[in-house]
Length: 290
Image 1 (tube, rainbow, N blue to C red):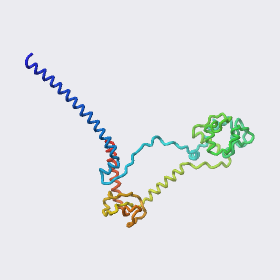
Image 2: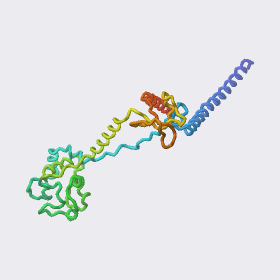
Image 3: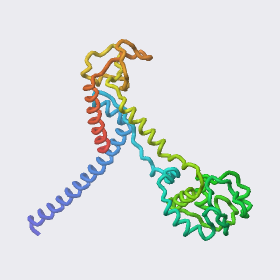
Image 4: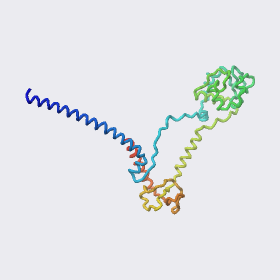
């Protein structure tokens, strides 16, 4: 083998060794750098909260609350009053004829069958229809057949009155049950008024909130440092809470003695709100990056 062949072999071995060394070095840089970066990111995330990042990046601080999930869907509320207000009596009659008429009559003066006649049943005392032999459990129950009791009874009679002789599985669909109750009320002389919908209180609360929003004043109260600030074009110097007031005392101090009470121009308030929105977006982007 000549000198040229030896040089080729030696060159190939040297290139292989350099390639292996380069791969080891590159992999070490990639993996160690990634882990160190992740660790550094974790330390930074632990050391600096959103509020601290706001204070570092901007001229004013805004308390940023961590957003948490609600953890599930809102529970559906059964509003008997609201459902009765929109009940379909005609459908209730059809359901009654299909599910109840085999055991009950509902016309005034109708005869008892397997079950008692149900005319004027809404608001009547339990187990009170003359000439019918009720089960012991119903005879021992107090109260009357108000709308809530009728709803619970028709949903599952055996659960409402354990030991009843009424062999009826119940009306599990809300619309069927409510329609039948409305039909029973239509066949009752002077029936009690339907219960008030629960949504009425929620609507009143919403109206109150709308009224509070509409009553927001034109002046804003801000607490400034004790040494005073004359430049109100720089609202970022305000350190206190910003809230709506009806009037402003230009000379008084708050209970803490932290500063004067002044009127902040509406333009300054809008500038603060715009800047706060941009800052919040920046914090969100920084958090996503971390």
